[in-house]
Length: 296
Image (spheres, rainbow, N blue to C red):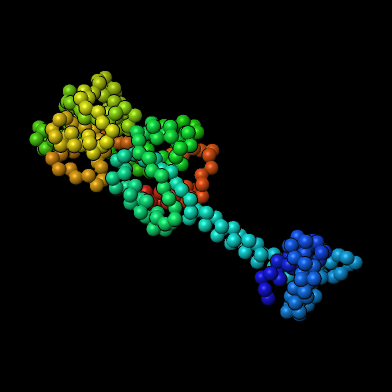
């Protein structure tokens, strides 16, 4: 029995006319008739009753059709699934992410994804959270790995993990030998900070605003590593999360004793904008990857 015979049989049963079935399948009517005749010989029974120019399934035909239709449906679904998988395995994903995540997390993430889907290519963007979310709204990126949860209604958000914020000081600083510190002790310190728009700067400003103060920021930058470099040069202190993959030579990290300060890292996308198959596949992989503890 050939697969083509089942397709010819299904078409003839649905059209109840050999000529119409042949036209539907773009084959000649004699070729379809020969195929069906061969099928019936192999099965040892007639499947159709002729009524003038039309044909109708008989008792055997109806029984065989029920099973043949399920087999063909399974094959159709299998072909569709393979087509979708092929679309997923090719294509391009545009991802925006925090600069601090580009040191270790994103390289590991992309490495694990490309082990499974090496044909997918990426366009990567690094910026302040506010700028990345604007890129997302404009359709310049598919997904945004950021630190803001209170997004606008059109932005969907999936929280992935949280990071504690630490006070970083030079090893010669009077605070360096301690494990924690209170806000009042750092209120008058000189701060090295990221520029406004970055999530760490937002948390720094909010910390001081909640205490009725304003931070004394003497240097602003756009790179977390650069900020830590200024701290390592003993030019000031900083409020940042621990950055995986960055050596902490000449720097000490202290917790805030009187206030636990964290930032949430999550994945954002436009709620009603369809993602490409490759981007949808990568989104699922990213969520699974972060849940398996790869963010630590």
